[in-house]
Image 1: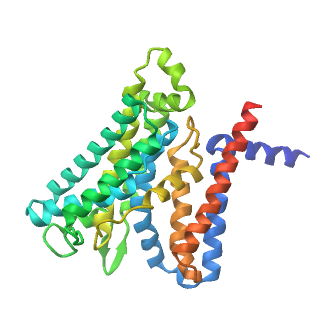
Image 2 (image 1 turned 90 degrees about the vertical axis):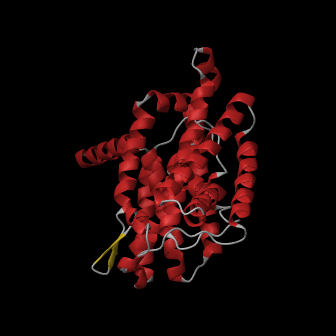
Image 3 (image 1 turned 90 degrees about the horizontal axis):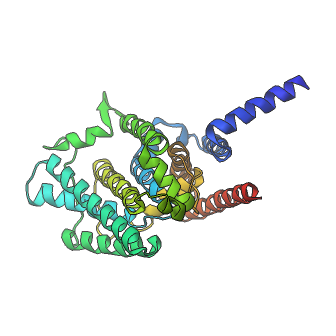
Length: 333
């Protein structure tokens, strides 16, 4: 009896610290890892870790950013095609204008912030549906990237060429072994943005917008300012994701990127960010992205390709949304 009470207390403490959904997602991660490890010897190789990290860099960066609009009960659909467009523009600045890589990075970030600001100001000032606004900007950045690329793939400096230092931000070659040091920066960003969301005025007001926007407005808070801030954060992290994508992969194909935003949004929702706004966590988003990245990495090892990954991710998302709605109904009741 005493042991049962202690176990219950430990379980209660764990769910209070991380949240029920986050604890369940950790269980899903463990199950997926064990399943892929047992199903394929190849999955247990070190190269799998490198591949997993390659996926996680850009998906996680997008997901951290989009968590903020989602918490306001909004969404940012432009980030998927956006990271392709921004990285192609950076490539154009570096390869065609012969500017240093640092300048290409600054231009990439500036363009991403510009579209983040445009999304926020149109949604907040004109009170238009976030889905429609960001769907339109998704199409705009997709077309812009294709026009600037002129049908050619964008390429940032490859390893060994001048300016290739940008690739060592995310992985380095140590004695023939690739080390994904980018995960150090990802962990730092998770800690920083968790602090921003939970401990700063920006985070508190963004959560309050998703909980009760009208009540916040009536209390005298400049709702437009903080709603725009949520989309600026999304744009900022889309810019970082564009740099991560360009510095991790060899080619950037114009006209692509549609669907990448769903991986990021899916990761945030799986990690506990509510579709109806008002709640979410950066650590939960990280866990959700890890589930998505494990599926992307592991399913080919068991003979299932991209289409199966989409189906299984969709089913996992349905489960996450159902759990969120059940939790909200219980809280309301």
